[in-house]
Image (cartoon, rainbow, N blue to C red; front, side, top):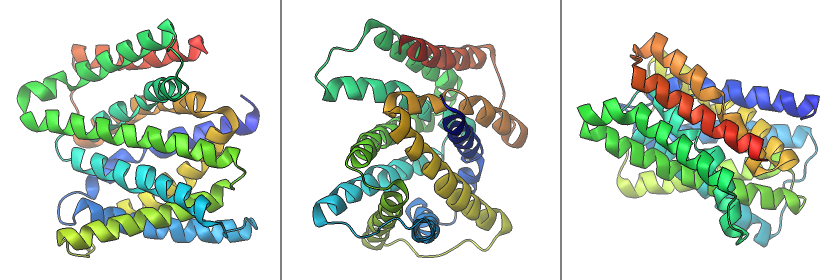
Length: 288
C-alpha cells in the first residue's frame, strides 16, 4: 500500500480498536436504537460540514439516493443495532473479534456476487478464522445461553456491514464522493433508527452521565466520522477484500483494552482462538 493508504489503514485500526468499550457504555438506560440515533445525528451533521468544506456536491438524483439509502440501512443502522444488542451478553473485545470476520466474509461475498468459485485458500482462511471465533466464545457459551444469542446477533451485523461494503464500492465506482455519500448514508441511517424507535415505543432520552456522553461523542466523532471516512476511502482505493484486512489487527488491541477495563480473563483456548482469527486473515492476505 502507498503511504496515504497506510495512514488510512492506521486510522481505521485505531478508531475501531477503541470503539468497542464506549459501545458497552451505551447499553443499559437508553434503548440501543436511540443511542445509535444520537450517534449518527451527530456524525451526519459533522460529515455534512466536512463535505461542504471539501466542496463535494450533496445533490444527487433519486437513483443515487436509493443506493445511498441502502448504504445507510446496511452500515449506519442495522449493522450497529445488531452489535449493540449483541454487546449485552459478552465482553467488548469479543465483539471486535466477531467483526474481524468481515475480511473473510467480504471475499466470499465478492466471489458469490461474481458467480466465481472461491479459491481453496479463501475457503481455508474462512474456516480457520471462524474456528477461532468459536474458540474465543466457547467459554462464554459454556457459561451463558446469552452468549450464543450475542454471537448470532453480531454475525448478522457483520453480514449487513459486508453488504454495505459492496454498496459503497459500487457508489465509488460510479463517481459518488465518499464524504457526501457517507453524510447522506448516516442521515438515512438516523431516519431508519428514529422510525424504528418511534414504532417500538422507545423513549428519546440521553443518559445524563459523563461516561455515556463521552462514549457517545467518541463513537460519533472518532469511530464514525474519522474511521468510516478513512475506511470507505480505503475501500474505494484498494477494494473491499483488501480493505477488510484492517480487521486483522484491531481485535488484539480491543481485547487488550477489554482485559484492562473489563477484567477479561485470558485462557489457553482464548489465545488459540485469537491466533486462529489472525492466522485466517493472514492466509487471506497471502492468497491475494
